[in-house]
Image (spheres, rainbow, N blue to C red):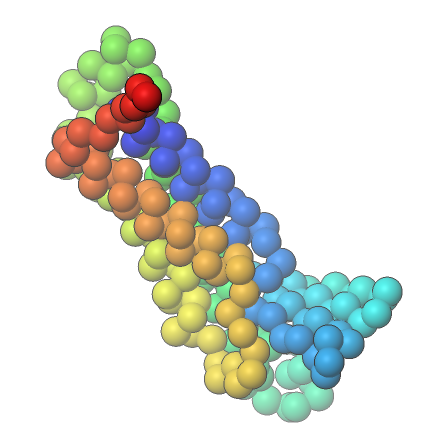
Length: 185
């Protein structure tokens, strides 16, 4: 139970780091002269010592005014980020609930077992990592054609967090015994 809860905690930390991370998409400029990166709700441009950060929703409105259409790449990136944000926050919520359930003293755990159906407990546990992975996959599907823009490290953090969340539930559900043994020489 302790290793599984620890892995869930790591999953939670990775998902939070991904949510607040600035590198969901990255674009390195000519010979490294500039770096453009997108988080789920902001775009950032680093040119030498100067740095500029703008909200994707503001850039979307500006792009719509300039292009004269409601179809704009920035709007699609903002929309994809909004969907991913919702799923990732739900993953954080369910992961937190699963961790709290695991850390409850025996009396509290008995109360939860008596008053919350096992199916609901199972849904919450499996949803923690699943929602994180679904959020990243949905974000990627909703992105417009990004051309030479690369998927950044924050997206990978969320995927790893989701995989760890699912892995810890697999270990706990199927009672896979993980024991750490130190060898004597």
